[in-house]
Image (cartoon, rainbow, N blue to C red; front, side, top):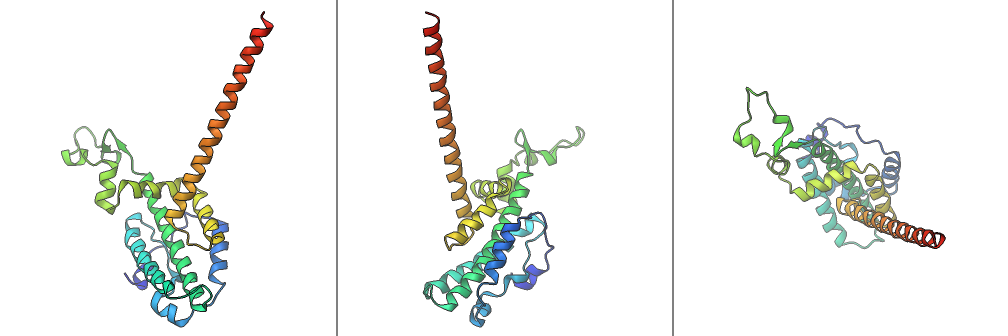
Length: 224
């Protein structure tokens, strides 16, 4: 897929994260790109995420290809080379676009609902009963057939969409660690926060149980 093909897609305004845009702009303006990097990697400034989720997979694949090329180029450079920063700047832009497209797909996947193993959007009037094949279309199969994605990847896309602050946190963490904002980093942040919340809940339950035990002891003393 060429840049021209992608540029023909319709823009989406469903994500409005001000801090993300500020961070993105700061990265874009930090270092001028060399002509060599631009020639090899292209210019992502005018790229937009497709409006339809079904158009996102080739867009994501395009970004994947660019990022792999950029990674190979970076291996031959040190982080003090001006070319290194030029390539990192472009990598950031493509990584952000890819993450946004993955979030777009997560929104679509969250809208796919199944009722007793059958797609809810295929439920028909009694006189138009679903075919046996339609009944077999579970959510996992729909995603596999239409997008060729595993259930795990689709679930991660959904998490990226459902947890509204996760994308912003991923960008901030990547910027802090001089890393790229990726789905893998987003899932790492999600798991860390999930564990922290679980530990806090367990501690709260433990303290509550201890409090109730002390109350019972006090009540027994007062009733003697």
